[in-house]
Each structure stands twice: as structure tokens, then as C-alpha cells.
Image (cartoon, rainbow, N blue to C red):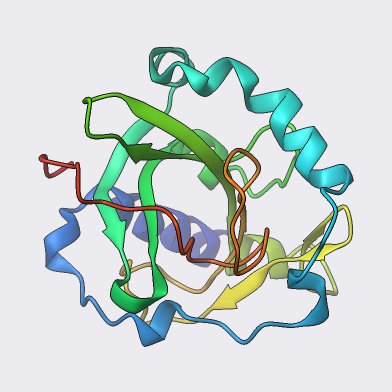
Length: 191
């Protein structure tokens, strides 16, 4: 069992460090069915926690100083909108723990002036790590994480994720994967 968990964790780490262009780009594979939990009209407790715990990351240099690194370039989803730039903290992804004050990923939108605007956070845990220790799917402060099975657009083993658009209101919902008003148009790099 430990060998399998280690192999899944290593596979996830390797996939997170592989070039983005090597993975299939299916948008439908990362789409989701919306439930009432995704349509919160008032900013809730989780949004407040995310804002409080990521305020310092409005300056991307602070995120980098705390171990976050750009991965996957700018994730765009065509008619779904975009997710933006994912700055991933690999040790947090691989620890198998979900803590609302320590998101595994912070998300930025590239602006035309060259700056990055913090738009949200993403919580991610490998399903093998979570399922081996917990009888039910993960949730953060009442919000269920979405299961993405393998194969998926990121080339990862099965994982759970929850986007929280705490810094830029999303007309399609605070907890949906894609943000209708985030754009990758100003991004000129790869990773």
C-alpha cells in the first residue's frame, strides 16, 4: 500500500513538472456539472478565509518566496473562459492535507501592462492520498471538491480540486473551475 501511494505521489509530482504542451487539451474533460453548492450569491466563510490567507500573494514575489512556482502556462478554456496562471506549491500538493489557509495553488491573471493580478486559489489533493485515509470525498468548509479521473488534461492520476475565485468575481460561480472573465490574452510565456 505504501509503495502504491508513493508511486502515485511521485507520478503526480512528475506530471506537475512535465511541460504543459505534452498533455491533451480537452476542455470537456475539465468541465463540470454545476450543483447548488457552486452558486453562492454572498461571499461565504471559505472566500473570506482564502482572501485573508492569500492577501500577501497579491504580490507574486511573495508566493514565489513561499515555494509557489508557475506551472502549465496560462490555462485557457475557450468558450468556458480561463483559469489563468497556476502557481503550484508542490510540497502542499503532495502532503495529502487540505487546509483552507494553505492553498496548494494560487491563481493569477496576466494583465496587458505585464503585471499579474491574483484572482483565486485552487485546492488539490491526489485521490489516492485522500481516499486511503478518508471514507468520504473531501470538502472545505462545506464546499465539495470535484473528482477528476485519469486520464485528464493535466496528465495526473485521479485528483480532487476546488477553485475559489476569491479575488475576482466569477459570473458563473465562486467555485466553478473556469472563470468567464479571466483571460490569457496578455500572457506571452510558456511556463
